[in-house]
Length: 360
Image 1 (cartoon, helix red, strand yellow):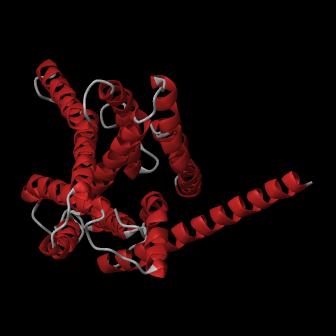
Image 2 (tube, rainbow, N blue to C red):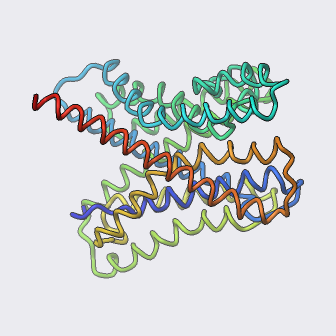
């Protein structure tokens, strides 16, 4: 593995979060036309796969212990995930409620009540079919699906890992979701609830992310030939770029499933190469720090941009289509930066107070 930390994947996280912004802008104001960023939903494939990668890494880390307890380890893992999401989620939810109260006061009660599953990030638990559409922040369906599927995937994987290697554990996880699909399909005459389909997507793509972890481990142990050390970084960059291009270029809707499959394959390969340490190496510490910081604000961008879109939508602010992009993109990044700076300031202040008490 590379000695210096490579934050190329954090840059990718930032760029994919921007794809989501463009996608929701065009979904809101494109009036059904095929516009740039029409395929921006492909960014979710990246986020699910990288979640699966880190899930597998956590499984292996815990499995390396001589002794561990299943449920405490599951609780610790899930709390770690929730803790990373919770602060920005709470701020975004409060902002969304303020916008609703200011712009749609007469409907505020119903909107907030219908959006309660999203407040608790359970709107993908098939609370009711399509409940994600009533979410106060619609893109949070990804976070809800990720957390809910992880809640089941993690203990099952950890339990299986005691007896099987990581690859077979992941294969069984894939088998479980196939069985669930067949049972649900026959019981509903294949009129699958949309929430279930999205949970299926989350589970399946996180399994692909787990496979990426094991492939990266395999690649990292292989001795690199001079040719491979030159070719792998090129392949890695191309694999990251393909889904980004697919998300930006206005492909017809009929090709959405094809582009989704290609995006999953590309992200799978890119993550495996990046985390193997055999891909593009960024040794410049300043550049790595910048990429790392951009990745750190991606979740805030993801959660804040729908609130900004809703302000323009609720107030019926009529602008040229391109103007919405020109305004929402910098505003989303600016609010994410502001949130991150304030959060870091608060954390630093709390740490200083703690240090002062320890000294006293």
